[in-house]
Image (cartoon, rainbow, N blue to C red; front, top):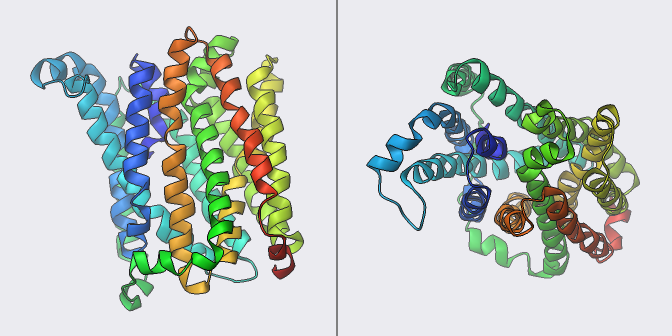
Length: 376
């Protein structure tokens, strides 16, 4: 679950969109900037447990007035918003503890097939990510907001992982200075920086789209289920189905070529989603196709970065491209939240303006080194 349920929860609970956007931004920036510090594989289990704390959001909805009355306001946020902030911050910390270690381990399985293994890792995670809003909304509506019931299977799964899936490499790993690892990347700094900007834009545009999807779907007149996790799940479904084949193709044809192609197609599909008003079946198909392109930029970009980087620095590169890039992209929910209010609560107009960043991303793609295609 993690923070993926926040966009739909803000709508279910009737929260202020601008405040919800700032909460998402502050949490994303403060958490993901620390991802390089969580490269050790032993933190995976702790991260998984912290991520599930977002399931406490549901029951707390009924105590909004009480929390506002009992707790003081801080920086213009009432007590209820402060509690939401703390829960989301813990969940985000859990995600940021898990991702670098998992991506580094997945990408290091094979030098030649790194893109495919990394794509498998992200695709499997995307299944849960895509289902999170649908499951959360279903339980929220049918069990009278008691989403904490989902902690039971989470704890059972966590116990199984703790008993049978302990990573043995954690016992043999040596302590490596984060700052020393970053300094060793100087010869490839230009390429990593270009990838950093590309993945920042990709993460930001996707997070902005997901954040305003409930309002956007309502504005377009689409069914409620599309706004409450359906469209989000369809986009993630398309990404999940497409990640592994594109990772395999990138390993064979060239990671740079496929990455640029996916950036161009993701830009086209994004603008089709936010600009067109379609019949529901056509919108469903467009979400799946759009997700296929929008969701592959991230794993392909990380795989290219891992290929460029020295073998011993794969984890730190993963952390930079997944952590600091997502940190910069995490500013987008606050931006679209403010724009949404300033544009008279017009989600479509807000998302169209956000799509300009995708065009910039495409131009940045042509700055990536061509020699990497020859080394795959």
